[in-house]
Image (tube, rainbow, N blue to C red; front, side, top):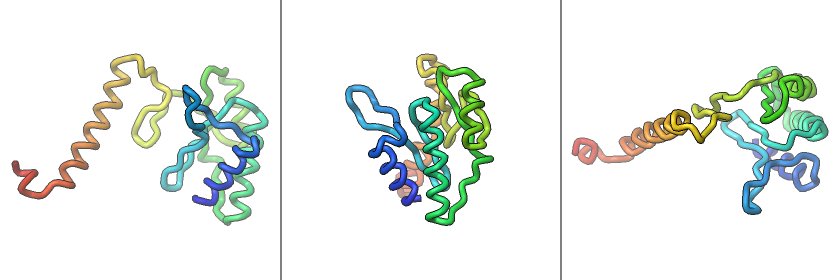
Length: 143
């Protein structure tokens, strides 16, 4: 997957696709990779979607690792369902709706609501507790 990382970074440098800049002139986030999955984040521009599809095809041709577009989903924030479907058809992906769970955490929820915030903090505490327990000695766990 490192090859895909290089291809995406090069595409951003050449302004073929645009990520999202964090506030206060922060870093640009364009993609998140985990195991054999990738989530792309960017501006809602048709040319970016076309270029992304082309980049993924280049990745396939150069690596031999086929991208399964039928497993992919396209999500939009602040755009109509019709626009989401239109963009999804560019890559032959499915149109998705927010919120969605990604890596066990909700994406697209209103973090201003306590119930949504509690879900994230509870899951994080649960994972940290498991991590702490596995890293402690038997005596420390017993204590």
